[in-house]
Length: 337
Image (spheres, helix red, strand yellow):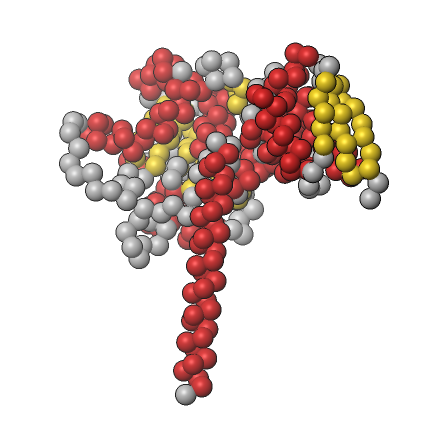
């Protein structure tokens, strides 16, 4: 394999953003792609096998372009640009970055950050009902909230309804103090957090008082018909089949529904079938319903979260394989007697 070297010019105002503190991002790219990099006078010299040098150059060019667009480059950006460089989607990070859904109350753009998230947002735009399924940190709820708020601001729907099952996450909390709203608010806090960040507390409270934005536990949906609304069911893995059927049959004309859930984090009593699992099996052949499966590569929280998700996936896969092996040996042993 031929060795080559090439130079990349980095504008001085973007150098720190692209290279990272103490050149941390340079070192990560160098280690991942097995190239040598020498930074001097606003330029980087890349030395190594031709294929790897060209790969590293493409990653740098993508990061420089992201920086020029006003993005603060994070470790997640670098990790994802590197991951894409090994696939056919090598330049999709720039295409993804152009899809701005809305802006937070602080002016920060809300947009998909991975190929999986881009596909999720595109499905929401095209389908009446979309199931967003994936591990923690993949932006399922946050992106759904952003799409709902933007549709509300554009007059595409008259109201937003956010709901999730009120179920304890592996803990027995006992009797909570306060009125009914005080008791259910802790279960709905993640939805409030996203609303406040994207819409602002004042705007949310103003629209909530008028009944245009509603945050409620799933049980409150029974018996209603929801027309011209953007409806988000969060933590759907904790619904029962009856609850899921009840929810999906509330949908009226002019409404859009997003169902989010993580099949690996169920808090239902042992032996209870998840309404999300059953809905996936029953509804997968209906064209008007979209299913988007996000993976650990779509995690956009701290890079350590991605490693944690992957570690749990590997552990569960290994345990499943061992159980199958044990069952197989037991079956053969009985036949051999």
